[in-house]
Length: 131
Image 1: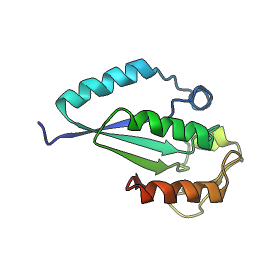
Image 2: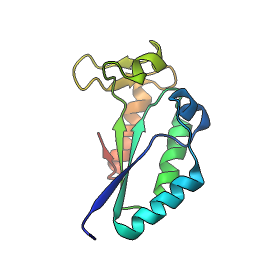
Image 3: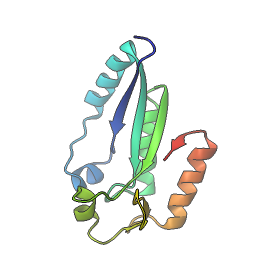
Image 4: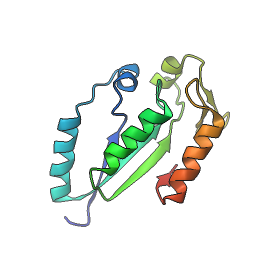
């Protein structure tokens, strides 16, 4: 069992971001859950970058929270616009996505293309998996 890797999702620790995607987040419960999983397996945390209402500060807070959990690795996924998903409704035309699949986020009302590019370059330079 020690070779098994458990992938856990972390959307955001920010209350405004969580509300915008109709989610609740309980830090204590999440930390307890990750601690239990770490006793059994290696744990990776996957974070989606640029949920609605997210700012650079709120994203970096989420990343810092995950990083402090001392897990095996963190992977960052750039938000994708999938047909009939909450993304189309929640961004309400305030976001720009690529015109080719997988329809990755290019910019939003809270983050410019240059900001997304700089965040991606930073994390790649830190050897964080960024898709």
